Amino acid sequence: MTRELFWFGVVGITAMLVHLVCVSLILVPLGMPPLLANVVAFLVAFQISHAGHSRLTFAAAEAPVAQSRWRFFSVALTSFLVNEMMYAALLHYTSLDYRLALLIVLIVVAALTFVSARNWAFVAKDKL
Image (cartoon, rainbow, N blue to C red; front, side, top):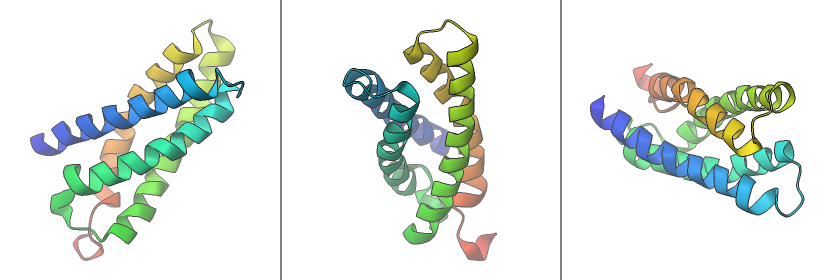
């Protein structure tokens, strides 16, 4: 599990940085509203996240890529919905800068994603 946590952190931080850069340095400065920019950034970061987790974090699970892609997308989408609700709440009810609010949300949601990915998304069907 130590190896998984290490690679989950590396892949997760990489995807989080891509997500954050997409929102704060590209999409919002181009005029896209923060919540919509967050959706687009999620879709970009998902590609990096799935590739990294299937090849590095959970490679030993040997789940077929097609299976893990859809399961992990379900996990990521659920996490993202929590992300969007938390992000909207922080933007509406606090005076936090949108970048700091997003960073807080991304860190909190990471724990939910790890547990779900480890225990379901990347587990081969025959090992459930």
